Length: 172
Image (cartoon, rainbow, N blue to C red):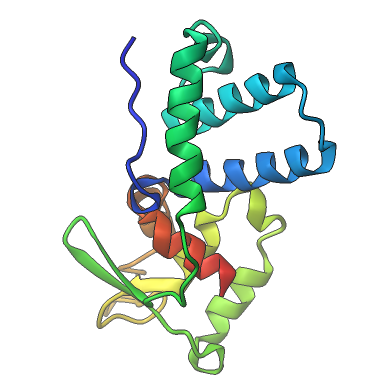
């Protein structure tokens, strides 16, 4: 069975990292080191970062589960928070995040406040805060049409936003 896992936090997708953070909180609360729960945790961890269903992961040999989850655990443990760079390049387009919230637009503030549960879909906040370089938030053309809608950035960021910048942004 071929399993693709990220080699670094940078390669992780935002959805994977959010699921990991939620799983880590649940496991931390249980504080039970029984082998079954540890194996279940390892299978869930592999599922999150590989995209495979947990039941499919459970079909792997125990040595493979332990090896793969060990890789992921080391990857996560080696991550060091840093202030977000405030810029990313995705698919050749540079996006910029204004870290001084006094300088962001009122529209951005309103749209951020309209997100009911950022944890359920964090890419919404990222798509509001990271704007195409040399453009304004929801910039309009001469006919009043938005030329850089949030939905376009959202779709791109959901698949390609760098994981390390994502964690740094949410830690900011």
